[in-house]
Amino acid sequence: MKQFLNTAVKAVFDDYPLEIRRKMLVLREAIFAVAASEGVGQLEETLKWGEPAYMTAETGCGSTIRMAWKKEKPNQYAMYFICTTNLVETFRTLFPHQFKYEGNRAIVFRETEDVDMDSLSICIAMALTYHRNKRRKQS
Image (tube, rainbow, N blue to C red):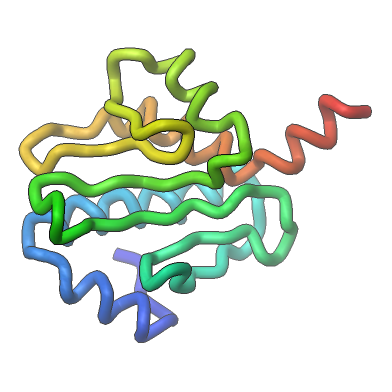
């Protein structure tokens, strides 16, 4: 497991229920693994709105990914994307049956379900390279 450099982020993970924490740590590892393989540079792990967030601070080539578990919906957790992007719309087109979506901002996971990590890794890569790919399309 990748070590936490930000103690505030670690504290948020530590507050999650055990099974949710395990599953969200898998998502966290996937974000760092995809970032390393996609050449997006050093990720910054921080809190946004009190939730773990991952930004391509070094290169600026990606869109922020946030993750959260909410007490109001204790059996689910989610990966959030900036709602003004077309990311979730694209994910929904590519993976209509692999995930549950919340509007144009999130992929929602149930605690009892397995996550299709191959498909999710593609979604993560698209988010972490969003601005780089957007610039290429405009050129």
